[in-house]
Image (cartoon, rainbow, N blue to C red; front, top):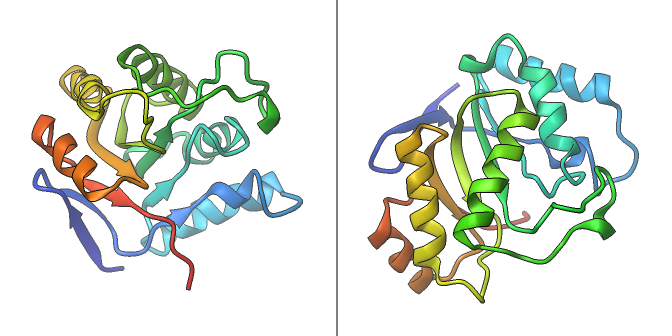
Length: 184
């Protein structure tokens, strides 16, 4: 499998990543055993880059990924995302998610939930899933930069962000990756 380097700080990932969203939500019925086998087989084939998010399930996809990588965490590159409040969310119930929240406080509480669900002490690439129009991107990325300093995340990404927002964010801390939904 070919490798790619993301960002100036050199996050090396497999050229093909595995999006895990459909393993827990959105596309009909799911089979946890098959999903775990798929994640593990992907690694055997050289695909070590897994993408998940707190929103997927909600929260159940991060738990699934955590179970699938258990005992082999350091062989994978894990990307996950935060955006909406999950304080009162019920796993698996999309209607229980709260609003977007890019506040520094929410950044810090969200990462703790993701770390717990993924059963890891760090996240390789942590994205803001959707930019909160009510919070300056500098506040959000500033809080994410604190997580880098603490070793809880290694790299910062943005998903569905406009060019000017990306420039402002990058002025606070290097942005290693951008994610935009695209379907061929």
